[in-house]
Length: 384
Image (cartoon, rainbow, N blue to C red):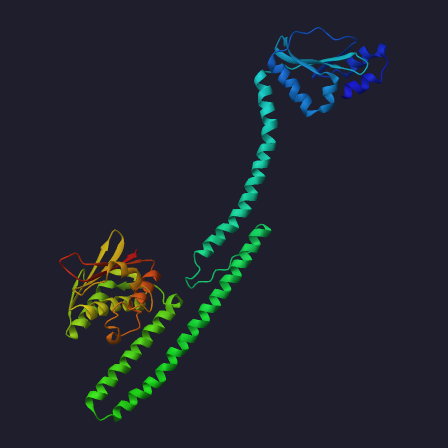
């Protein structure tokens, strides 16, 4: 286009000389009053012309024509371009080129914008997905007792969603915390009148009445203790330490036999594992007491299996209906309706076990013994 403008400003007689002045070490330029003779263009050069004129619309009006011209060193690009007065600018390159170079150049010209768009799109997608991943991670911890505040970042819509989630989580956490504190306060306050009742028992003359009242007070104290243990839940700051699980289980079995109950232990003499000792001891004790309540005997076993600690407590009681097993793990659920008035506790025994096992990232599985045997088998599996 620059050559056309410069030659148009020169008289016709001076144009051949002016065209030579435009020749460089890369291009040869000359002027012709008429269109030069040229061979028919193969499809490849026609497509090349179409691409060039599409990129530079002004060239479409100049009847740009391109071809590959044989030379001593290969092929060079040559062509003609018509000037407004009908004369022609003829040009060709000095350096030989290969056809595949044009394909690469055209491909690169097309790929560069596409790659830029893909990079920009990837950055935008990453900026959107990263906050969503953090939000999904936080959603997975809702209800676990741990409050996770998500940083508000990303697009306006994502920030609004995260803001709403943080507000919802804060309200849920405050509601649970307030109810837990209220129940815990009630539980602690109930122990004061229980202590006074315990002192007043000394003045009761009738031995049978005093023993019955003593049992009732003991049951109420156990109920309050189990409630406080359950409410403490995952807020328990007890750290995990190496504990001899075999000794713990054997000691609980020995305590049961000292009370005249039929309890046996099978397993190694020593087996250390990283656990929260108080919570796990309470869980294992609950399982043993539950087994002795519904059955006449209990068998406790400890073993290591495929990198997991396996604690098994089996009894010879009636077991649990298969459709009630999941329900039995819920807090405040008591399945023995007919004997409910004579059953101690608040239905928190298995719920506390489930809570303790969850703290250890383990699993609690309940199943019934295979016929003709009866009884419930409670199995705890803790990761190494």
